[in-house]
Picture 1 (cartoon, rainbow, N blue to C red):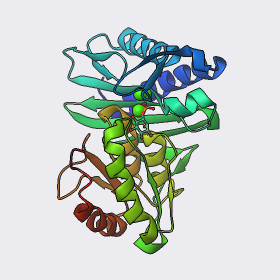
Picture 2: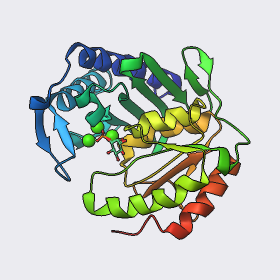
Picture 3: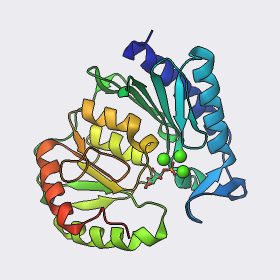
Picture 4: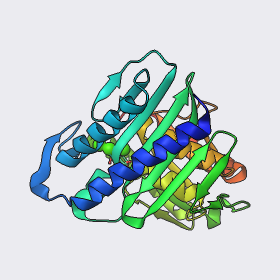
Length: 265
Ligand code: IPD
Ligand code: CA
Ligand code: CA
Ligand code: CA
């Protein structure tokens, strides 16, 4: 019943159905229905529609499960299984028609993430992972890049919506940029982590994301051999997510720590 493979299959079916619905309905700027933490933190009618569909499908199949979603909050069940949903990760890209956004669904059993799906809808790419079962894309097992020194690393990052934090993020970036091959700011945390898993970038770091941004893609990255964590031995969290193969993780970690990217403003 709580077998990771069965949960993964259900999560994949639901993420594909939500993706098909979103692809059929292209948004326009007028569909921004709300802003959240800042004027740039937008929600469209399709973010909420996607989450509604996902919640309905999960509860049809598994009425006792809990769900945590970006747009709908927490709904508690008693089965010990919890679904973590980002109905569109990369809403700003979605709104502008840029092809870097995803439906992200992770499943926890007893508090541990055992399955993750990231459906990068515009690209028709569905990344999947189950705990101990590897990370996969189109039938191919994924492995992150190894042995890349910091100076040669292509590093993805992102910036939270809170404008008061962006000055610090820009300072961190100004110190990182001269030390690496280059920086990418794709606009979707979930896609960035899947890019680490598939070797399209070497590393990713970001401060101030949320659990639904990285829950599914974090498993994809670790199952592809990457290390994911916070700074100074902390686990990865809403405060900070750093992801890369072990050696590069350590180099980038040591560069980031003195830049103090976890301070508040
Ligand atoms: C955002 C994206 C973005 C990241 C932000 C997230 P949303 O999620 O993942 O890349 O930089 O921190 O909030 O709002 O598009 O689901
Ligand atoms: Ca959002
Ligand atoms: Ca998100
Ligand atoms: Ca979202």
